[in-house]
Length: 153
Image (cartoon, rainbow, N blue to C red; front, side, top):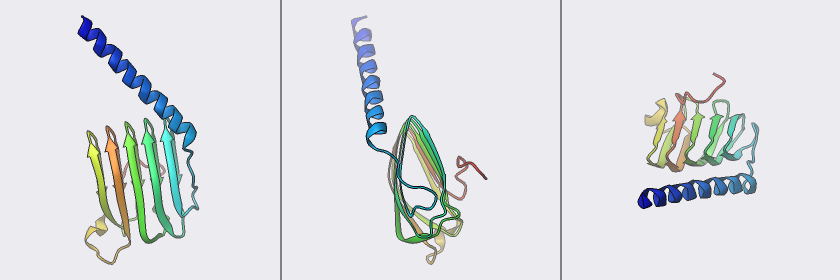
């Protein structure tokens, strides 16, 4: 019985620590960027963010979903050369819808989660390239023309 009680106290401590850290991140790291921004910095902690970008030269940026979700539609954005997105999730999800002419290069690492990054232009070497990096822990990242979690279709 003593072992069970110790494990329960440890588990409660871990969850309380994660909740406190997430609340601090939510307060300390605000989101930046709107539908016209060429660079995004989106943070969804215990929250959800939906954005439809119309950027004229989208360069990328960063996205963090911690116990939250981010849905971004880039189908109306124009991609700048060397565009790169840094994607990170912890018990959250990110869905990014891209135009079919873009090519994706994904270097996102999953840990107890999943990553799907596909576009029809994967074999077209002349297509604009969006480079993805980051990690997902107990979460998911979907990028491409079939990122169904992005609303507004």
